[in-house]
Length: 128
Image (cartoon, rainbow, N blue to C red; front, side, top):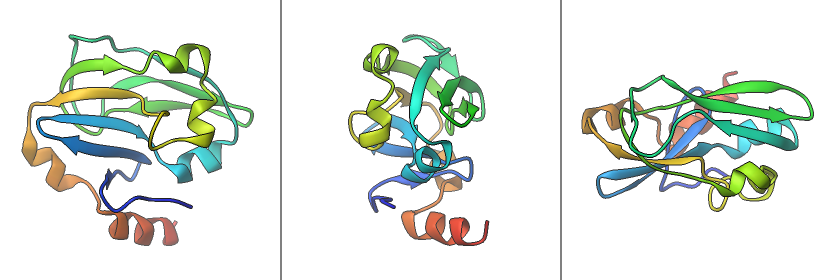
């Protein structure tokens, strides 16, 4: 499985790519693999809305299960990946590129310290 070193990770299997004061959020390759083929994504947040860490930001459905999507950070939603409405399967092939979920303008940089590095995330997965 692929877990890029330049990302931060959560124990609920989201990833974050920090780009200045904005963060791109998605689900990990591990999460996608565990869920199976993604067939539906519904984001419950829109651009301009404020969210807090651990808030529900949507639902994801696969051939195996349905799961809630949670925000790992607090801030204001800047963009939602509209491609996922019509093509949720993009996550299956590209969870770290085209399959991102949303972009958030970070409001509390200290929250990034709570996230895992790639190495820490891999160790966490080994212990599951």
